[in-house]
Amino acid sequence: MIQEFQWAESMNCAVTVCDKEGVILYMNAPARELYRKHGDLIGTNLLGCHSERSRGIIRHMLDTGESNSYTIRKQGLRKMIYQTPWRKDGEVAGIVEISMIIPEELPHYDRG
Image (cartoon, rainbow, N blue to C red):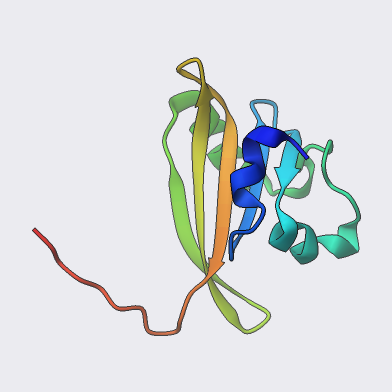
């Protein structure tokens, strides 16, 4: 396991980290469990398992440093997906994806 991602190992959500070329560097325990039927994905390129539309979004995040978020329903569970570039020495070095199960009704608060 890459030491710099140790913080994510015990999180109660799936965390996947890739480099700037889309090669998966790290998956925490929930992410490995989520994709276990595909085998060990570390070292593989995630661009190969995404649609052209998704690849475009990934390339855009890597080029611009912008984040992407959305919700999905998968196997009866509602999930929030948050994808954001991570940086090394101030430069975009890849993307972190956090996938978390969220309740059907999610409270919203306006603060300010």
